[in-house]
Amino acid sequence: MTTDPGLGADAAADGRAKRCGFIALVGAPNAGKSTLLNAIIGAKIAIVSPKVQTTRTIVRGVVAQGPAQLVFIDTPGIFAPKRRLERAMVARAWQGAADADLIVLIVDAARAVRGGIDADTARIVEGLKSAGRQAILAINKIDLVPRPTLLALVRDLNETGRFTDTFMIAAAKGDGVADLRAHLAAAAPEGPWHYPADQLSDMSERLIAAEMTREALFRQLRQELPYSLTVETESWDGRDDGSVRVEQTIYVQRDTQKAIVLGKGGARIKAVGAAARKDLETILGHRVHLFLFVKVREGWIDDPERYAPWDLDFNA
Image (tube, rainbow, N blue to C red; front, side):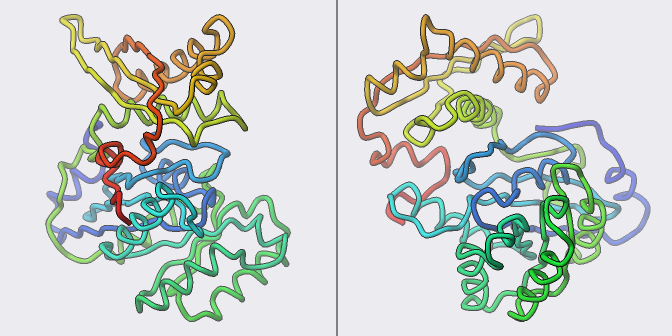
């Protein structure tokens, strides 16, 4: 996934020493990691939903800031897992943090209104302490919280001794994002760039397409069954006019779930297809012919083959 070369392409040739940093974005579910990633990159590469545990795998976003190339690793939310898929997601998140040069912990400030540091964030802080890692603290959604609550949250978190710097941001609005990105660029270690200057992500177009459809399903299904389904891109055929024909299968675990996804007279699946198609055409820059099919695959969540496209460890 690429875009037109910008500042990074010029900076790479101006004689300054190149830098390249891998930066893990970690946090509790729904803290705003994917929203922050999209804001930093300046393009939608990670799906966003009001629902928790939307991100299932590692999403890498790439951006140039002066002589630095920043490779952001958007990880699944870290929480107390109960099911196999949840355990695999949390394990992948910690692996992403372990492999990173820098770690940014995103904290949902709105949760502090309900009683200070939430349990999931506290668990992450303990994990950082056990790993001997320092992190950069990003307090998100500051526009939703009174200043005294913010200051108390910052004080309590910094008393843990895990944070080198603190940034106050509202990722959905872009507030504070530029300052955070500039700080990360300055902190990135010297070294060669790992990706071309115009590349935004290392995700395949097939996976991006599946994620866009999954996001549309999350939004359409609301409180129904999004965690019981998965999306796979079955075919991707380019056409002479520059458009692409994409076929995807939405797998659910029961016939009753299939009926919900289809909706009355197929209305829901049509709405999902229209939303996903629109996002894909914006991302890819050309017309997309998207065809969706819904199939029942009982027990897919316990099938090791379903974990491979997400780069998740089935046995985690």
